[in-house]
Image (tube, rainbow, N blue to C red):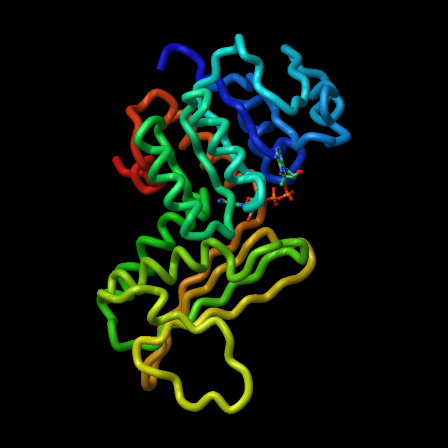
Length: 267
Ligand code: NAD
């Protein structure tokens, strides 16, 4: 691609937003054109230098887009409460939309489908390359061993708002789908008290929270006499930021439609 991709980061004051900004600043393919923060943020109208040190070309943190600036793609890592506003802004300005915000509900997914009629849209519960491979493996094992019990365990830092994690849910959905079922019919999110024996086909979730854990997921497939486990451990938020930026560059000038991170990675 000859021209640089103009990137807007939505949620620029957050942990992931700042990791995405670092990735954009380091990329030879992309240019940061706007770093959006929520109205009232202490960073509003402050120069990016305040957080990222001296930069060759300065950009301010901002609460709105410049009507005269050209933007190609918005990368959103804000949170479920800001998601509608981020998507609406991308549609209004006809900017491609990449989001890693988790905790989304059915209405948010419907809104993305609607938006995909006019702009390219890509959402992923997890933008790490390792997790993309983890998902492919889990789907394959789930299909190949349909009678084995399956539980998913995840751990994240103490400040995470949603549970189970979007990644755990995506893994559960992939396994349920590979077994010809829906996650809504097979998921068990709580086990407490005298609950009786496990039902065939159940997919159980266990959520752990604590400290500064960036993200760990294990899928356990178990049957009589043996157990198969696959684990992914994220040690650094930059892996998600790099994946999201790769997705943003890939989607920036595509036709409107709904895309997946797997498509970005596919040869
Ligand atoms: P965070 O709380 O550190 O950051 C969220 C930021 O969004 C905050 O700074 C908040 O002020 C800002 N925000 C809220 N409303 C806004 C608005 N209207 N305009 C602009 N900014 C606004 O959270 P985080 O750890 O960075 O995570 C953000 C989201 O990303 C969560 O949903 C998390 O689960 C998800 N996440 C996804 C992946 C992935 O690979 N898909 C990886 C890590 C985290």
